[in-house]
Length: 323
Image (cartoon, rainbow, N blue to C red):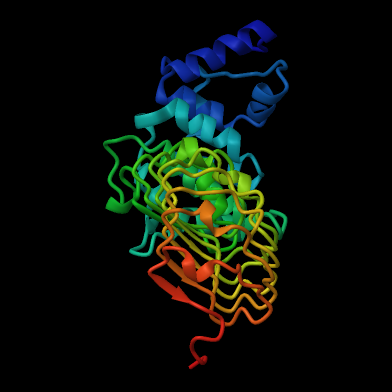
């Protein structure tokens, strides 16, 4: 039987509503035209009543069928099918075996995801991102009753995305409501909405330029670590009402700080060994500043009134010798 476009829609409606039997679903996964049915609606034959065809369709396990789809590059389509099957997928835990988030917050993709990466023909530059993205989507869509590592249940409090491609995990998860500490290697989108309780962010692994606007709206953010980054200034830093500490140690390209926005909450500013830094601007724009480290800032022109400011822990460029 050849289905019309309208019948195709009815087939997929039955599939995602859970009205199809397991046998019919497996047959749909096996059919060579299934991918095109969703991406480019067209006629397709589904003979669910043919017993001979049925024996062929169920020859592979459901997990193996998903493996085939993903290896063909149809990650999003496979995830859509996973959403449709939900708790009906037998052995869903096999998708996540070996996967976890370790004590430092690093995601470790599951054995299933790693095997897909090795067997796929993914572009070398994208394969790591796709690996983490696939793992994240499998975690995101995991039914509640499926056994998995406890670190994958709920939201982590710490997340370390310093591995190549790990930003794919972040993009695959809809939100991290309990996340407090985040380490990144690449710029991320929707940070304030996905991580509403973020308090600390570490940019030290970022090798290129940093888009400071990504911090817009992170109103619980209290500590930012820019150590060793290539920042030249902080002119793009948004107004962060809870910001208390900014670490700029050994930012060897940092030239000036006078374009850094005023902050009434900032308490600690560490500029140790910022060798190209020449100006600070008016420090009175940081009325809560209690610690300022300028050690090693050899080209810095100090404000004339710096010692008159109420900075209880002030380290000047020549105060101590480098140990």
